[in-house]
Structures are given as structure tokens and as C-alpha cells.
Image (cartoon, rainbow over all chains, first blue to last red; front, side):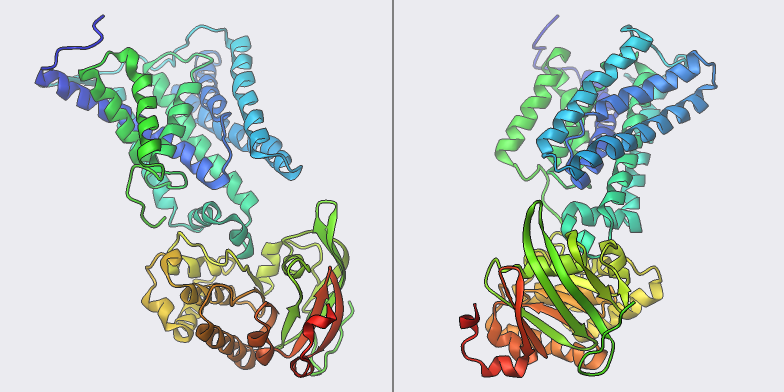
Length: 298
Length: 244
């Protein structure tokens, strides 16, 4: 395998990488939005998000392939499971820890614990091997020299539709309330917003998004018990690239991340993907710790 | 439920009796009792650390009360949530974070009326506040944290008014604004109380500015109310600090 490819990459390769970048970027944008919705509002390092991701995929493929439920219904059940799980973690674990005065480090460690124990549980039930969602093979389209599949189109459309939906909800009563809680928790309580309810709302929305991402992922690739860690990590990186608390730009940061990773394929082998992502985070945190975009009103 | 009468003969808007309250096991308020009538401005004076802010937070339900009662408009609200106190017509304006700095002026005012479901009522209140403080209309789309200190204070009052508050708890409204604006700000609080029957519990270091607009004064030391007297009596006194 070549590590550094020829400097003069062919135009068709570049074009293909741009298209892959759009697909990957849309997926990362969804991850960024999902993590940002939860983190900017609740300030919880919700690593157990990785378990929610994995659970959504396994519940969907479990109900479809083991119970024989129709695939669309199975996906809906998987998404519901994600929301229920995310909200349950907030209510049962985080809320009671907050009430007993646990530090944010303590809450983070509990979350990390769930993100390790959860996938282990899934491995005990389903085994360590990859499992596919029974969706069949997608149609392959070729435009000029560029190829893409039905699932690529689905990924792009679904990701941006969900992101658009969440951003549109910011104008609603609940959306405004969650912006307020993320901007100033104490004052939010003083104007009569219950931060507890907004936390539940943030976990429900964030879990729905991460569950959707997991389903989109398993359209293309096999689910494994440890599938959740990397996407959640990338979601956090997008959140930090965008500048913490800046929900509007988190998906944009995710998109840039996916695009850069894909285009780095012109010069670098795929094996360097993760290094590129962390390199980008490293540089951004030094050069622009407030986020890579110009700061605007929330 | 017990209803007490104040000097003006009207029912007290707020009655606190024997409040004990603190952070964790450490109690800050040992015995705080006070009353506020309709349209009355009551100022709590005391040193730093006397428990003035804690008292306001306890009255507003931001801190759980260990013992004692809080009665608002004749209803015992000691154990009710902050949100329901806001719906009941109470507001609290913090000394340090009284506005959403990252949001626009307009968003701030909208959030002030978060508990108001009726959009017509919200629009009416917004119009009234724009009349009172035209600068908040002119700078509606400005990011609140980028306005001057005085404008931010006006916004904090506007935010409280948007909730429909009839009882405002104001913590150090003069903090960080120019002395000339302090008088203006306090005059508009006085006007609101006179014209709209607004009741105010004021915590203020700037005694000179607070007394002229106050009806009554409470002296708080080490979590206990030492003395209560009319603002006129307090003004006549030139040895406030000897009380402490």
C-alpha cells in the first residue's frame, strides 16, 4: 500500500474524493450536531452516547433479523430505543449524580463506564462478529467518472434534514429554552425555565440524531459492539472545532472535518484518517480555541 | 392561611418568617423575617457576606429553605419551584448574571416572558417595555453582552417586567454602571412602583442611591435581621455602620 501518493492526483480521483467528502462530511455533521445538542446544553461529557449509538443499530438489526419485523419498522424501533436509552441515562444516572453533588469528572467517569459496559453487554448477547442490517445492496450510480450508491444519497439527505429540523426547532419555545439554558443556567431558572426538563429534551433530541447516524452507518457497514466510540469521539471533535456552545456551527465543523479527511486521501493513505482528524483538532485548539468560525450571536 | 396587614392597610405581597437557609450543612441565614407590601420598595442593607444575596435566592426558591415560611399573595410558597413563583408574579435579578449575554436584546426579552403562553400578552408587554426603555427597542438585534453596563441593567429590568412580575427581587442593580445612570435607573424603578404597584426587595451597597427610593429598610448582619425602620428614619441616621 502506498502511503504518499503521486503529487499530481488525477482530476477524476479528486472529484471522487469530493463526492465521498460530501457523504462523510454530512455524516460527521450529524454526529457533531448530536453531540453539540447535548453537550452545549447540559455540559455533560456524554460518552455513553457511544452505547446509545451501538444500541440503536443492534436493536434495529435484532428486531429485523431475529424477530423478522419489517426493516422500516425495525429502524423506527431502533430509534425509539436510542431515545429511551439516552433519556434513561440522563434520568437515572446523571440526574441523581447531579443531585448528590457529583463533580463533572465523576459524571464523566460514570458515562465512560456505561460506554464500556454497554457494548460488552451487546457482545454477550450478539457475539463479537459484525452484523448487517438486512437492507440488501444499494443501487450504484455513475456520473462521469464518479460513482456513488443509494445509501450515499440517503446519508446526505437524512443527515441534513435532521440537522435542519433541529436548527428550525431552535425558534420554537423549547428550542429557545434550550438556547437559554446553554447560555446561562441560573438565569434560565430565574425566568421560569426548568433546566431539568430541557436536559431531558436535549438528551432525547441528541439520542435521536446519534441513533439515526448509527442506522445510516449500518446501511453500509457491519455493526460491531465497539462501533460507537469513534463516531462519538468525532462528534466531540466537531463540537470543539465549532467552539463549545455554538450549536449552529457544529454541523458545519463536522462537514469540514469529513471533507478534509476525504481530500487528505489525495496525499495520504486511509490509515492516516484518524491522525488527520486529531491533527486538525490539535492545530485548531492552538490557533483558534474559540472555534474555527467567526463568532456570531447564538 | 394567615394574612398580615402592613401600614398602608393592604395585604402584604410577601411575608417571610424565620427563614433558615444555607449551602450544604453550612447555614448562612439564621433567622430572617420580612414583609413587603404592594407598591412598596424595601431595601436590605448589610455587609458583604451578611447573607443578602442568599436571602433573595431563598425568597425566590433558588435555595432550599431549611425552616421558616415564605408567603406570597397569601399563599404559602415555601416549597414551590422557582418556575411556579415566576408564574405567580415574582422575579429575581442577579447582581452578576442578570441577562443572557450571548443572546440578542429581543431574545432576552422573549425569554423574560417564557412562562407567558398568550402571545398577545407577550406583545403588549414588549410594547410597554419599549415605551419605558426605548433603547431596548432601538438595539433589539444587538447582542446583549456588547451593550453598555447601563443598557444591560435596563435590559435586566425589562426582562423581569416581561414576566409580568409584581414583586421584583433586585440584587445590586447599581453594580458596574455610571453614577449618573444609577439615579436614573432608580428613578424608573420608583416610577414603576408608584404607577404600576410594583413591589421591590432591593439589595444594594450604594446606600446613598437606594434610600431615597425606599419605603423601608432592613438591616441584615450575619444572617439575622437586626432592625427594621422606615427609610426616612434610616436617612436621618448617619451611623448605619455602627449598627454592625
